[in-house]
Length: 51
Image: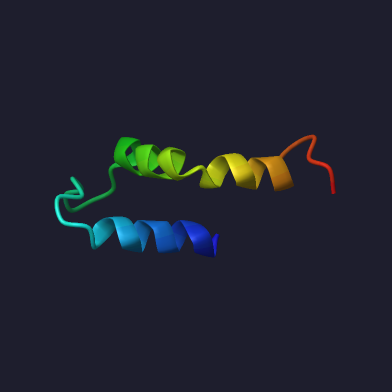
């Protein structure tokens, strides 16, 4: 998901982003949930999606 990489890069360039070295799953989930990307992804490609 190129969009998720772009959101991650934009988040990490924002001063005070709140991430520390290492992988913080909860913080990553908060960022992805706040932008609506996952909702749109699952609406398009998830179970029951109309194709």
